[in-house]
Length: 287
Image (cartoon, rainbow, N blue to C red; front, top):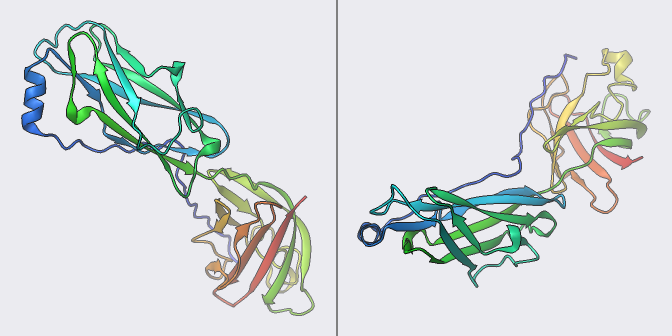
């Protein structure tokens, strides 16, 4: 068999931010900017940060901005006060806290913005049903006006499952088909699942020994790297794409289990070689 080329899937990294443009009312904007020296508001109306659910406290920042008024070249210090909208599903003190426990920020003299810093607690993130934090600016001092189009910020708190299945395992593979059944079935050996980062893992010999220590070594000249693959783990689900045994694609076995038991850490991988039909179910038990 030929050496396998790896195709790596990249999952989403932690801390992705998405913002959207604000649907401005031209007449209201004109009124806000014309009638006051200073107009303040959030720089975005929506944000969707994503954090690993690894128990860490994650910092998030959104700017409160001083928009152009009729005397923007020089401005005093402006303190902007905000509140948590009652429609929020995220709970203060449980899901998040404001840095310095303050619900105000100050745009310093002759500055154009100030950061609003929030700490999100990843251990309480609900991956399947993201919580939402809605903030409203309620006031600004020193003759500043809150722009109505920039008054509300909606933050959707997304989670990415923490993945940690790297390590040594005892793997037992029960084969559904290969060229030397039933003599080599089942087979147990120790292997390492290598953590490649971002939920990706290197797996030596997906066949559970058939290609590295089993009868395929003598019969077909297979060896240590003949069936190496890269798998992905996300929220307990095992997946892979673009993997091969050297003859053809290797895909999940139809109807098979590909998952991690959250209680025991046992990994089950059900695989099928499309070229010649080798297939099996490999059970990886942590050592």
